[in-house]
Length: 364
Image 1 (cartoon, rainbow, N blue to C red):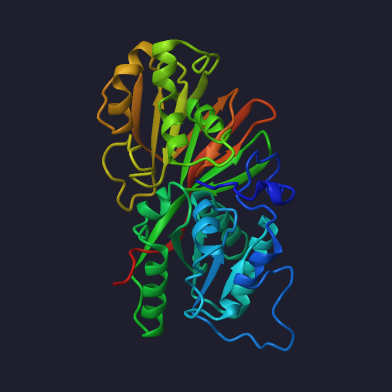
Image 2 (cartoon, helix red, strand yellow; image 1 turned 30 degrees about the vertical axis):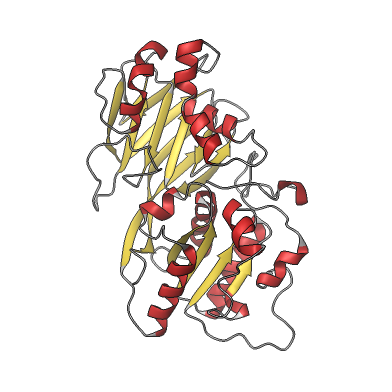
């Protein structure tokens, strides 16, 4: 998930894809952090000739672990990467500038140190600037709270170890083990824009994440609290389940006989820690996991954990691999932890997106 620890340091950056993003991953940060690397708005030091470098590192200073552990203490990339190879971005606009700079430097790989939302925004920046199949290999480093994507993509170890091992392997000329990963393409027909990512959710999951982000500095305890909101509402009452009905259609037919209150989709098999609600692994097929849930509170409460773990069988729950889904309703949605509220009725088309290349595992 993306994080907002620096939200008080400056104005929020607008979403580049129409409509507001209620909790951007990148926000303006204190100038002192720019000493950790160069800033696209400042550029390289005068007279410095940029070398050709195999790997560029983008650091999101708003990510929880990044600020707490690395920017204020251990900038582990110093000594293993030249200054020109490290970019501490202050905004989404600077993220695009960093990708453009690394493209000019001829990097073959880009590492991103941040949370899941940081990776979501990086892949969008890559797709804006590279033709299909020509983007650098991406190395996600675990710098957020959940780090579900880094784990799902097999680079979720200690970021200092993963980065240093990857740089050393590239320096020895060792070809990295690479996996090609399909993305989700989320076409927001109401807002008139398209976004890309790995995991999608709407309905009650969106409502739960709104609760999560109400914490000033959300962490693991807040995530656990948000995940059991359906159980608390079922046992003690509340408005959590109220007025949440989505229309979910695949190939023109309803995915469930009745309107679900929750829908999730993912191109990874294990999207987030304990949350693994899908069936068989996707393999290399150009499809994504889809799950929709219409269970009533009294039905869901005793089955919540089995739903999370993909073991529940119920007529108001359906999971399966699909290539496209249409979702409509009065809800916002999220992509990789980033919230996208809908100013009007939501009307989305979610399809299999393009592929990008990722380090398949951290080199030993």
